[in-house]
Image (cartoon, rainbow, N blue to C red; front, side, top):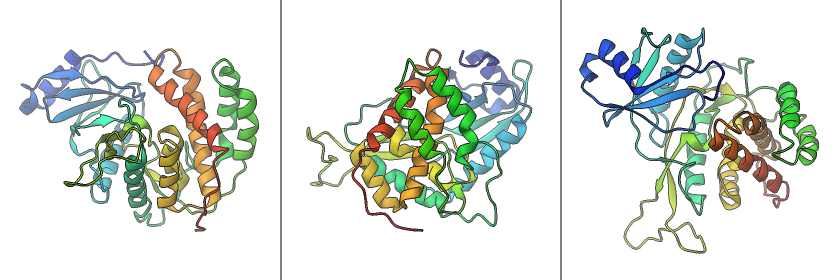
Length: 323
């Protein structure tokens, strides 16, 4: 159990919900999907569908479910890779107190479950996805003032607490002064649409398809086959926010060559790039200690992210484009 108020969810509970509300799917087998996700539990429904149920009670659950479905439909028109396709919304039942969702199942492996030796092919696909999201018209929308995506310094309290709780896990004496630099970075770009949660567990990857005779590696020393981004999951956080939010994969996922390609393809200015580092820092640090025992995958991802951020402090400068 990751959260003190986490709801107990089993395949039997999900099967009963489906049988009562969607009899057309009642004969499909239900099985839990192993996942490091922290917000939703996932259950396969047959081979083509997946059920998503929030893990913690929320008074806003109905709005959040509708928001996620709307975000999924919005992305279907613009994303260069597959994204979730909504199928149905279920209602609360005797054993589950909130609305829940059925989506089409997207095949593939999440980036936190595969041994990728070179990330450049994935980085290129990620940059194309981010560009497509950033290009969506905002129609005058701006950041709504809640959560990540606005003012970096508004997360001082969370960072301070997390540094205090993480001394046994990370080099706090190096991270603390880095935070003091990152927290005061100004804005150079207006709000755009952003996915806002491009974590490895939300990125589907697959071996890269190549034409006959084409080099199928990513230029890795051992010549292993290259990889490509094959889908993006968990789109409920899609919102208008600081575009730097979607630079987080540079540190939570990519290696240095992948990071360089990602930045070059996106052509972001120096300050926006550093703000992306700040958002990656803000997301990783609380996960490091909070999930240390209950979700080791998330804690390890946070450890990797913070190590990459420190390593990136020594990156050679790249020629940047001003926006």
